[in-house]
Each structure stands twice: as structure tokens, then as C-alpha cells.
Amino acid sequence: MCGIAGICGRGPTETPAETLGRMLESMAHRGPDDEGVWISPGGECGLGHKRLSIIDPELGHQPLANEDETIWITFNGCIYNYQDIARDLRQKGHRFRTHSDTEVIVHAYEEWGPECVKRFNGMWAFAVWDSRNRTLFCSRDRIGIKPFYYTWDGRTFTFASEIKAILSAGAVLPKPSEDGMRHYLTWQFCLGDTTLFEGVQKLLPGHNLVMRLGHRPKISCYWDIRFDADSDKDETWFVDKLNRLLEDSVRLRLRADVPLGAHLSGGLDSSAIVCLTRMLLGDDAPLKTFTGAFREGRAFDETRYAREVAKATDTEYLETYLTCDDFARSIEKIIYFMDEPAAGPGVFPQYWVSKLASEHVKVVLGGQGGDELFIGYARYLIAYLEECIKGAIEETAHRTHYVATLETIVPSLPSLEIYVPMLKNFWKDGLFDDPARRYFRLVDRFSDNRAFLSPEFSADRERTFEQFRSIFDSHSAAAMINRIFNFDLKGHLQSLLHVEDRTSMAWGLESRVPLLDHRLVELMASVPPVTKFKNGQLKYLFRRAVRNLVPEAVLNRKDKMGFPVPLAQWLQSELRDYAGDILLSKRCRERGLFDVGALAGAIDSEQPFGRTLWGALCLELWYKQFMDASHKTA
Image (cartoon, rainbow, N blue to C red; front, side, top):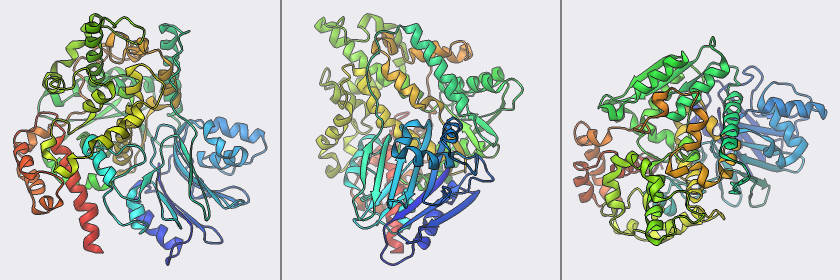
């Protein structure tokens, strides 16, 4: 895993080498093992690289070129099937100087051009300079595991793995994006190619970008989800296929020339990955697992399950317990590494568990993506429960587009016990409204807390909703569960992958996510909704696929947690003054984002697992670090 940076076009004063030096310095944490800068002979393109050496540590220096140095690359990620592609390329006459996956991309581009990315299985963000036609070709992996940010001012194209590198290049001045702010104040992440910084965009997952000198960048989609339900296959076929793909995905992600381990939360997803890893490595291979928890009660501690899996798989089990003091001394640093806040408080323990892992290994496998891919969130059940009630009332529940009926979903309802307060709020208005508006309400982090926002940011919500709808209704999928699947893969999951990348790279750690192999995504998109969400059972197919692998206590868990943080408890006790000093400060009042009086009351009344104060706290810390600091140094 690495940090990439580059400039295409001529800046007004500095040489590309000077600018790239600053960009790489801002991302030093991403690549502690090596650094490289390459400038084209004419000075029109510069590429930079910070390296974390995982595959071919000796010879994989970047930027890297082909034999005649007409093509150069800077690459972040891992192409897991690189050995198979290299074999094909050798048969076509290509010669390799290294054993790295980076060189495979260069020769694949030589052989197949931009179409090469369709052959890759992996995670990537890279830029290839082709001096033969003076073109920069950039690509991001199908799911969006690795980041790629860029800005274009009409003269110079600047890109990097992190936004702070683009800021350090002076390519844009730190200024909040209006759309980005509204996205964050709705979902606590930015949707689509938007970021919190005006003028900085994300290359979308599954997209390529071509920059020809003197021309505007051209962006194209090379991969997207297709919801073509395969009704010819039965449930057993899908379970067997899922089993085979899970095993192959983990097998590919065990390729490394350095020690590796695994995150182990005690949940079904990470437990399945650990069990598959042990099966594939064999009983004698060393394997370390890493867990984090809190001492504020069983609701915040999954270690009993993690230990059971570690014992069953004979791993070296390491855990860390975190405190409110750890939060107070690290949250500002975490926001700095994140560039822009995203997702929930789980970023805090994930940061510390990554630190623990980095002290023992250089690569970790984890279970990220399982909840989105296999229908694992309680909100999916909530959304569909409403559909079932509506279908029962209208006597339409037995039509083909319903994946469950009210009578069949009843056995799954006990898992909603802890969500009763949220259900009361959710159903107090809008019941049976347009499905898009109902799910928008479910994922809106401020839907019941409008009073915290100033009138300016409470307004224009219809624009934000339409941006949501453009994704939610962007496919021909008739089933509600597929529209949810599509939005969460392109929305919520992107915020979790943002966290995954930043918390691991902050400690020079490579994180691999086997459940997000694109073949698994394609398979689940092809499963008929009535099969993958059978009778409203969360993770129905996945549970069937791993039932002979995972200890029964984990397989049959009802108390799904998702790395909860006792933040509400801390904010009403040990962290009350800390939060007050930030959220009730004069500077926070002057920004005009929040009704500070409402926030003051919320500090004493935040609900367990609430996200309102978390969102406000992160946004204010982001302003302090990236906006206020830039004005002081300007």
C-alpha cells in the first residue's frame, strides 16, 4: 500500500519536483519504506510515490517504467491475480525485470491499453504516463477500496491519494464545498465525486480518467453493478458458488512477501475471514488476530466472541481496550489523517486496532463490506417491515416483487428490539411514503435533529434528496432490497472504505477486504431478492455458506454490534468539558453551521449510539485543522 501523487501540465512557478516533494511529505505515513519522483524529459508530467513494500520489496521501486521508458506508473494497491496476468503477458513476449504487480500493470497497459483494468482482480488507484501520445491514464478499482483525488484548473491536473497532498501542492485553497457540506450534514459522508473541499473531486469507483495535455480530463465508467436476477439457479447453487468465491477471494489475498494477520471483531464477517484464512494457510502457519473493545459494559465488548474464534482457529490473539482519554488525545489526529470526516465513531477504535496490528504485521485481512453485500444491517429489515405492513394492508404482499410477507418476516423481528426508540421516531410521520423518501429518512443522520442546524443548512434538502434519488433509483432493479444494496454500495460503504484506508495507512499498514472481491458483488447482484433476503433474514445466504466454518456461538449471534463506541456516555461525563470547549466555542458560533444553544442541550441528552454530536464534533475539528490553520499560515 502506498501514496501516489502527480502533476500533468505546467504550474506557474515551481518545478514539478519541488511540488511533488511537498505532496509526498504530507503523505509520509502512507509509505515509510521508500520514495520516488519521476519527471518527464519535457517537464510536462511528474509522478511521485511513497511506498509500503508488500510484494517484491527489493525491486518494486516506483515510479516504475517499461523497458524503453516510454510508459511510467505510480500505483497504490494490489493486483491479486498479477501472477496469472504476468503468465499471459510472457506468452505474448513481454519481459519482466521485477516480480511486482506494479510492472504487470505497465505491461498490461502496453498490451491492452485502458481495457487492461477489466482483467484485474484487486484494489487500485494508479496513473500511467504514456509519452507516446502524451496522455495520463488514471484508474480506480471497481468498488472504491483505494482513493484517488484530483483537481483541474484548466491548465494543470493534480492528483493524489489524499486531499492534504493536493492542498500542499497549492492546487486549490481550502474552502468548504456547499454540496459537500450538505452531504455531510445529511449522511456524514460525501456522495458521488463530491468532497468537503471546493475544487477537489474523487474519481468514482469503477471509472477511468484520461488526461491529454491541453485538454479537459475525460472520465468513463468501465464497471457497474447489474441487477440481472438469475432465476434459473436454485438456492443451493448460489450457496455453493458463494462458498467457492469466498475461498478463492481469501486465497488471492494471502499473497504477500511480508507477515500478515487479520482483524477479528467477533462478528460474523471478520470471523468467517479468519476461519477461511486458517483453513487455507494450514494448521501450522502462524496467524495473528487483532481485536479492540471498551470496558463500559457488554454492549461495547465483543471480545468473548473474538476469543472463541481465535481459540477455534489457533491464532495468536491480541486485543486492546480503549478509554475516553485515548479518544480525547487522538481524535484531532484522526481527523487530520481522514482529510474529511466520514462515517461514525468506529473510526476511533479502528485507528487504534490498526496501530496494534502494525506493531506485529504489515498486512491485515478484514470483514469490511459484509453488511452491505449480504444484507446485514437492521435498517434493511426496518425498511422492508414497512413494505410488508403496507402489502398486508393492501393485500398485495404475495405479488412477485415482495421478497417477504408480514407473516414470514415475524421471526426476524426480535433483532429490532434495541431499535424501538428509533422506530418510534421513524414511523411518527411519512409512513408508507415513496420508498426512496423513506430510505432517505432512514440514512439521514440529522433527520430527527433539524434543530441543531442553522436555517441555512436546514434548507435546500430537496436538492440533497434528488442527489440521493439519482443513485437509489438509477438501476432497473424493481426490488426495494436491490435499490438499497445499490445505494449503500455507492454511498455508505464508500465512507467505511475511506475509514479503512486512512486508519490503516496512518500506521503504514495494508488492509485487504476479501468480501469486496468484485466477483462476490456481481454474484450477490444476480441472486433473486427472494433468495438473498429470504423471509427478511439478515445475511441469509452468507450464514448458509459459512455455517460449517464459524463457531456456532458466532453464527447464531443476535446481538449485532458493529464496533460500538460509548461516546454518548463519555460526552455526558468525562468528555463533557472537552466537547463543550469545542462545540460551544466562539469560533464554532461564528461559523453559523449549528444552533449552538441546541447543541448545548444535546451534550447532556445524546441518545446511546446517537450520531448528531459526533457529526458536529468532527466537522468543527475539521474546520479547525483545515480551514482555520490555512488562514493563519496564508
